[in-house]
Length: 313
Image 1: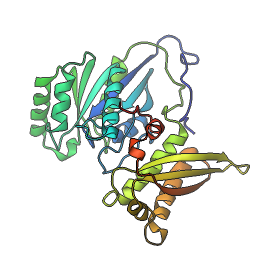
Image 2: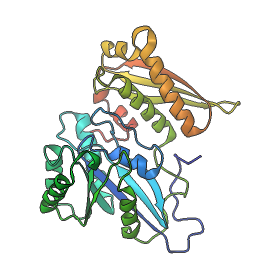
Image 3: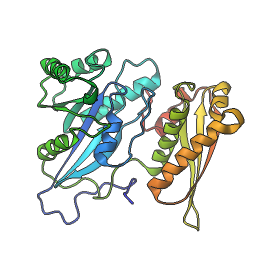
Image 4: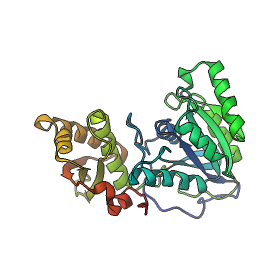
């Protein structure tokens, strides 16, 4: 089983001094495909995906190895114009991830083009000193002439070292992108154990998986302001694990939506989450979900800390 929750090492065990390692920050507008791309490049699920915008709330690091290079992808929340404290915290986290990176990769949804949030991000990137790469995603849905025009338009505004065209969903172009990163990242020891694929604690990843199933089931009905926390994690003698999680919503009407008629919605969410968590852990999982109304959770600094975010002051 690949490791999720480990402590970074100072170097690769048995390394001979010819290894490389570095951080690659993926930024873009909401729903540009960053999390889908990271999951594909890592070869495992480390970041949740849904049709709901701003699904990724905090910085998630996905780790992969290409030849002798350990590449640490920083999957950041989508950057947009914030309206609430949670929005502001997410955008701050995204730009914080950029400042920690060796390379910045701007992911643009080729179908949507350079407008709105993507256009604003391009303007903000002009002042960043790190090396920058452009990635046009969803190329299977756009003609080649439009892709070339889009690439030219983006490169007029920012000095990108290289432009790649990929389909994160289908994997097209991803091997060339990985080859480039493996060559360009700096020499140095690996930063994490060889079998580690993320720095996200398993308790938090399990909560994120449940939140993903919540959104997939109810994304048209449930407001954005819902949150999942893993309250307890008990390893049992038979090798299984008992997990208790709480879904926080802001109103009693939201709680009814999550539970559903006759408990059908909460049962479907639990079944989907339990199956996926069990596959990742490679052990049997007993998952118990509870739904609580907490009207002001979106203004609670403790909830922000649980999500790995700093509460804006």
